[in-house]
Length: 380
Image 1: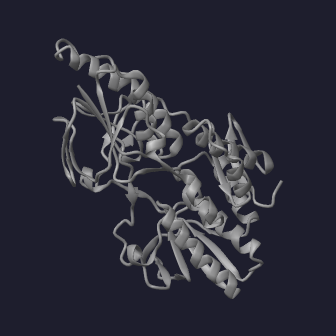
Image 2 (image 1 turned 90 degrees about the horizontal axis):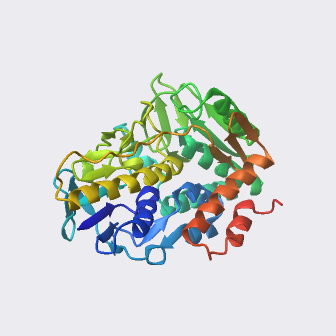
Image 3 (image 1 turned 135 degrees about the horizontal axis):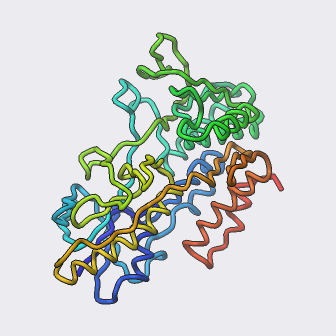
């Protein structure tokens, strides 16, 4: 019997590591990813201000896996019912599998946007943003526009404003543009208000209710005909499915079932939980879904080992926990702990703790002191 996990992001890596412990020894386990490292995606925005963090956030898969085989290949297509995968270097079949391939940046088909904007999905994107922002700071003036005020947009805008502040470049303006009425539009109103206040306090200009029509080489053109000039444009305005799923993010229900042999989790799919709530794509929800997927993969495998006779196995369901969010805004942060919304040192300490906790869950022997120092900079 063979179990395959496609994608080594948060969901895929967490699922694979759990299955290494839970699967019988005679079941082969393969993790497919075109890269040989796992990216700590939720901290990539920190590289915009602290480029030295880049190496800390790219961890070799060979150091993270025990019994699973890593097959380094690009996934071109998946048949979720048949358990068949077309790879760039051949084919792969499985008895039970999981699609955790993540997502790509969605430019929404807006003319000029993909050509003129830098997304924030990989370390090299953050390094490009850093280089361009630093050049503006050295010149003493310029404007950086960030499109999309979800958590990624909020965090990169905060880092850019902090970079300009550290470089003593008050002439560098950071503007965050969002088409919804509020920043962090998928979150609760108290959290939205706190994030907006933190952005303003950190020197970020916030413009909401702004619909983007297209981009030129030096300006965003809004639907009302006005323009927002920029020297550098960062785009964090949503995600779309990858090529392996035909550019779609198919919807899965709370049992995460994508096909007869396959589960889908993380950013690759749209999850609707057991209460009927659409689940936001994030590292937090991906890790939670991996727990449910571990149970369901093992149950479905046991069923198939028994020749698939009788009724389908009872599968576990995922319930989205809306509590416990934290977002950094430069040297500040906003966090929700139960019903409370926190700002200031307590929220920033929590944000740093979450990042270091994840690094140490990957490698308990890892020295994270350097990471903490890099994140906090000159702050105590």
